[in-house]
Image 1 (cartoon, one colour):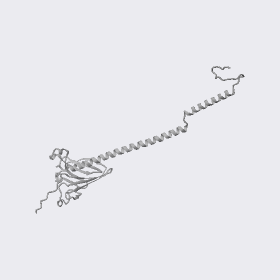
Image 2 (cartoon, one colour):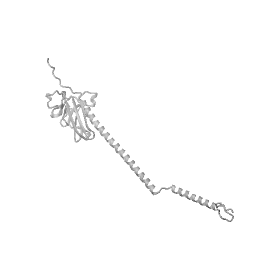
Image 3 (cartoon, one colour):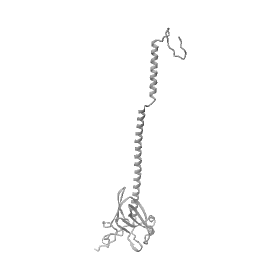
Image 4 (tube, helix red, strand yellow):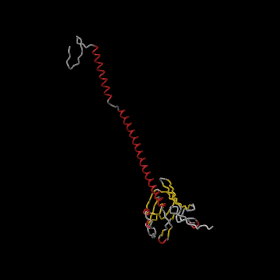
Length: 247
C-alpha cells in the first residue's frame, strides 16, 4: 500500500498493521527531536538570577573604575597646585636674592627726616639701594632704585620707590610676592664675622663694619613649603679701611 506524497512513507504489513519495530523507531526519533528543540530553546536565554548576577558584577566594576579615575584626577590636581606653589616660592626667593646681590653703597635722602644708610633693616624689614635691570649697561644714578622687603598680613611684599632721594609724601609702590608666609626673619653679618639683628648695628662705632654688611641671611617660613634659608653675600660691601700699623 503506497501512502500519499504528503505523508511519510511507513511500511505496513498485509493486514494493514504497522510493524512493531517501525513504530518504536518513530517514537525514538520524535523523542530525540523534542530533546533537541528543548536544548536549543534553553540554550539561547538567561535566567533572572544570571541577569541579576551580571548586573551586579557590572555595577561593581563600574564603581571600582570610577573610584580609580577620581583618585587619579585628585592626585593630578594636587600635584598641579603644589607645583604652582613651589614655582611661586622659588620666584620670591630668587627675586629677593637677586635684589640683595645687586645692593650698592649709596645712601639716600628722605625729605625732612634726613639721610638714610645704604642698607637699613631689622629682623622683619630690610630696605636698601640696588642696581636696577637697566644698570647692566649703565652706571648712572638713574639706574639705581630703593627697594623694601617686609611681611604684611602673611604676605611677603616688595616695595619700590620711584626715586632715590625722595620727599616724605612719596608713596611706596608695593607688590605682593607670595601669600601664605608665616614669618620673615633677617640677620646681618659684619666684616668681623659677627651676626646682628639690626643694621647698622647699635655698636657700629666699635665694630669693624661698613655701610653695607658683608652678607645678609634671610629665612622665610611658608605654610606650604616649610622654611627656606639663604645667605647672600653682598658684592659691593667693603670693610672700612684701617690706618696702617706703625712699626
